Length: 276
Image (tube, rainbow, N blue to C red; front, side):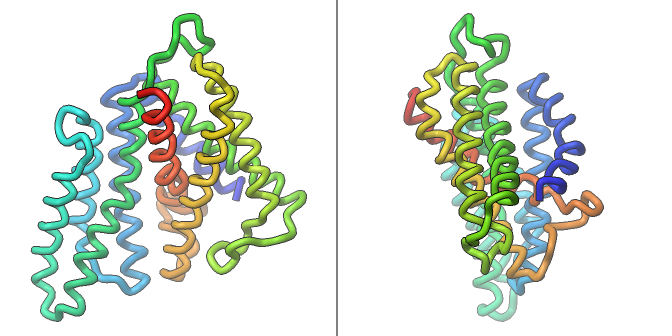
């Protein structure tokens, strides 16, 4: 797992870090492209699992939700209006299925797939809601957007690393093996500890109390693990090893961002609860 994610990181990290340094539009562009590609893979997996959908509309719906996240809070801060409009249009598109027993799941699946992929937009909402970095902080040279997105990135990557090494060394008891046979309780604990330590260091770097890592670290770690398991469940239902072959031998975009889909909303929730 670690080798696969590390190779994927070598491909994805450079443009991501460049976008993070440039900020603003470039972060939106990278997140938007990643979300659109992830949506494409989600709808492909859903089709393989036997669920009819409107994939091209679903991808457009995903991109619209990402753009709405980029425009928040000036446009539709909660995305509720856009979600309603998208769900209505998906329902209208499903009317073209002659069998209502196909049309109904087509509607549900299209909305689900678009919303699932659009969770990546919470990376942008996190940047918009990030609290100021006090002057004199170790990461004071960064903007709040850059600093808090960096915290999210390093937190998720540290979970993967900690879970892999501890699980490989000490992992015996499996959990949720019907979804992912490689997950162990030892790996879970190792990942939580690694994430908590990294989050504490990043919070200190951002001029915040590292004590907050006691809450944010485990929550982010568990969310990252849940995101990975959610994608594993989708792939297992589809009978697929990877979300696509976009990165030859190392899977697709969804395989690289699955943890962030769940972790980003959790970090945003912490920021809103702790600093607003």
